[in-house]
Amino acid sequence: MAVNNLMQPISMWPVWFYDFQWEDHDQHGEHLREICYQRERDQNFSTIALNAKGGLYESAFDFLNIEDPAVQALASWIKQCFYQAAAHANQLAWANGREVAVDIHESWCHITRDGGYHDMHAHPDSSWSAIYYIDVGDMQAGTTNGVNRFYNPNHNMYVDAGTAWMQRQTSTDFFGEPGMLIVFPSWVQHSAITYRGTRDRLVVAANCRVVDR
Image (cartoon, rainbow, N blue to C red; front, side, top):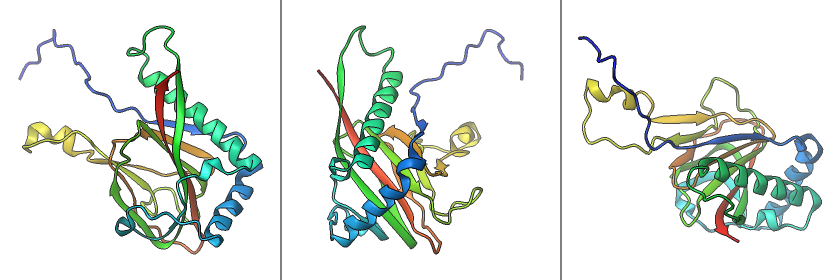
């Protein structure tokens, strides 16, 4: 079948994800690990969605508020990353000169051990979310062990050969590395696939709101 050479493809409703790398991770990473373990020893536990996860420790949702130089350095950097992501995604929507502020209103750490997982979920009452990888443990490139999986938000009510382009990528896996931050829209459904390993996998997660000054 001939293709109309006047056709102009149009991409609609992009979903922006952003990948950052913290240059100061080598300086602070080990200390951040110890703070996560100390929170666990202090029994600083989350009570959110307990039936959706297992085999992991989740702290209370105030991790980036800890008065510690390494934590505050990480918090400042994540706030900058949130701003850069939101500014890029909204470059055509924000009026010139619009002044906004990033409010990180929730943040927590995970220590995932052998068999640990987190079922599919989203983060309500936030606009952007982030996952920062302190230590990936025994995750190996090219596998799905312990990856964060994000699910295609475009839903289709009918499947045939004409929708094959959608069915080819119903989800995307992010394989983290130490010092890496993934920023994504809070409404995107995601999960932590079951982790297998003898070493712990540690991350810090955060949610933010972007408000007018």
